[in-house]
Image 1: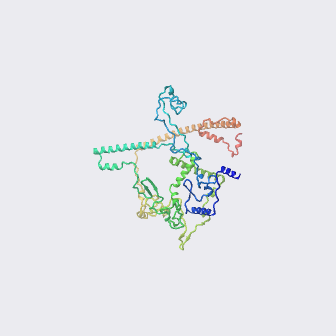
Image 2: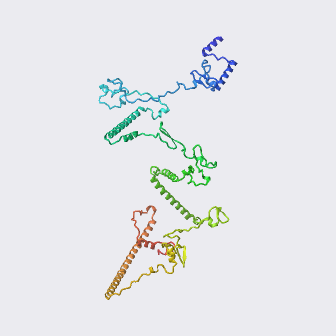
Image 3: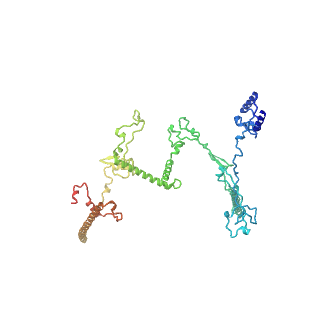
Length: 563
């Protein structure tokens, strides 16, 4: 009975349990594993001939005894399985374009398109022009079959590949076409040079010189620029990070407490000569920040920032596309901004006051003391600190004119000011130097003779001339009397006209005031519009009538005007 159970169990399982290893075999197995981990023994090989990492645990590499005890350790079950792996199309697979040009069909086939006779589509999918009598009935002009398209199974990258299905032969045809054009150009050029040489217009030396420049694609194989390495094989230029002829930044100042040098980016932002007291404009290198924040760099950055802000607010401006428009817009913006700040400042001062505190003199003048340190020597000279500033005037000082070596007011004599260099008492005069000093110090006036003009003697008039002069004077008196009469009449007429105009203006002003009072009594929604009235500049009479009729609240008799 027990044998039958064992046989039945063996028939179900069909495998025997592995035999228990002896102590010696277990020890040898452990030593072999240790040697394999240390690299002294070759790694174990699976059934496919691949090495098994000795550090992989046994429960991963070994096959369970109830699956197949005869199998050796393997990692095949850890790798992707072919039956579970998704098969995708190859990189060269794509849909075929066009039709099959090899086979020519002369007879209509059953199941083909009734319009054109192709087997690859039906009549409703046919792209040819509908025939009057289809190929099914005529049996002629049967169109060739299209290629039977393959079913592509693309992976993630294949679906997003922009060059998928591109045929490189198309580009090769373009290259061959340009090569033919280039060859034709070279042939024409050579023929032209040959004709010029034959006609004697071109010498042999000039031909050799022209033949050197035949190739239009020139590469700088022999170029030798500082800071560049040129590879003629790959035709690329590699830029070095520093020109070797320049002094390294970290060698500018060997003081360890000077500007920090970043070896990774090779940048030194601060001035290495800042601790030496040298002027940054005079040194050869003043740091990266000096270059970054000098010249028009700051102005350029401010303009670019303004362009970005203006574009965000709807203005179509761009620094590179339209720099002139942007510059004009930026200038007008700065002017408006300054005007707005000034108006805001004035409105605040007008509302709250305090302008007298802003115009107050400096604290040094009020307290007569400062915190500036100044050190003097025993003789009173300044050793450290700022020297006392010389008081300046609002007028121009030390301005020499007309060849003078001294200013006006440098000489005083007899209550008059003059020039010390020539003792001249005439302002804005030309300097005469030592000669002028000698003349001005002499007893007689230098221009006394020139000032006295010779008086011409009046010749006696004849009786006839005297009579004519009297007649002319009488005529002048008569004309002046007539003009006075006419002027008085015209002035009186003008005054009457002005009074009449003023009277009409006062009446119009009264009518306008009554009209305004009547409108103010009405409801706001029923008031008429006054925007359609003609607007003209007021005349002098209308302005005078307005001033006369205007009510002044500060007038003590204002309450009696209506009575």
